[in-house]
Length: 159
Image 1 (tube, one colour):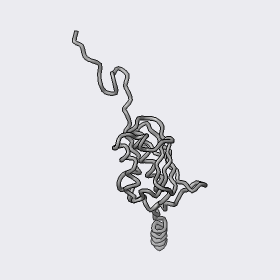
Image 2 (tube, one colour):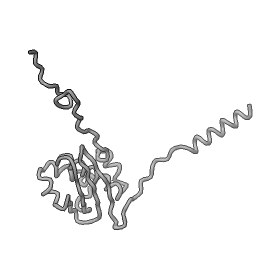
Image 3 (cartoon, rainbow, N blue to C red):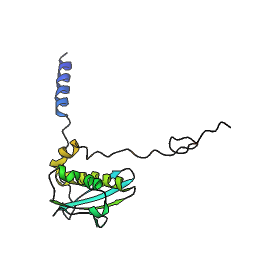
Image 4 (cartoon, one colour):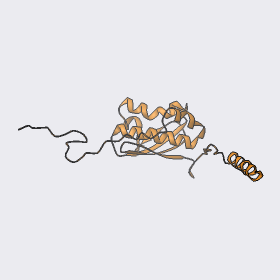
């Protein structure tokens, strides 16, 4: 019986000692002092680098207002910066490829949010709460054989 109580005490101490600690997020910078992250949305992939600067955003060697003509897309790109109150503090350089403009803007927002958390880990809570760090997994459903599109059937003809 004494062995059983000592085993339970031993198990109790190890269970308390093995409590999983919350992950500690540290700053991740390259040798040039930039934070890098990859963002994805639909078929688009964005590679994003941020560094302290004047707030300039360059996408595929163009100003982001020239690349994303629609104001809605420009707003989507700026959301992480405005939400974290870092407007005009970081220069953003990004390359985007694949998909359309809407998917590219979403990919850029995702990558920019991740890069901000790598540069300043304290911003993670704000950006995560707003859902900017979650990869939007919705993609186009594939076409099936015997169908016109993913779900649409060919027109039925009785005769």
